[in-house]
Image 1 (cartoon, rainbow, N blue to C red):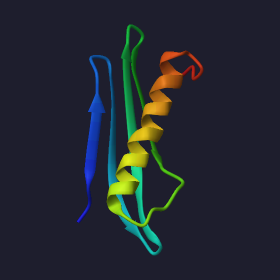
Image 2: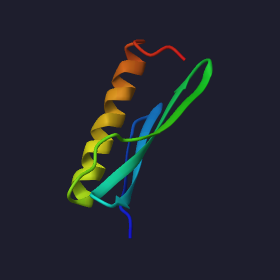
Image 3: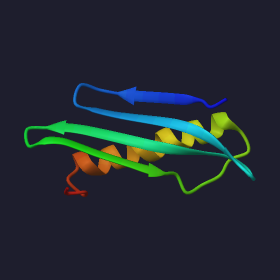
Length: 78
């Protein structure tokens, strides 16, 4: 069984899906930012492994929120 979570606002969203690994749990993070130029999407596997699914999901959401924060600050230009 895997856990998923999502955080969103009017023009962005962050979602995560956990998956088991030999050492615990990791997650895949998907970020979306809608702007006048179109929709920016990025998906990546979180580099950390956690003992619990809950920890993997929460840290994945934090990592995705960091991506959004950088994107909104124009530190990531794609």
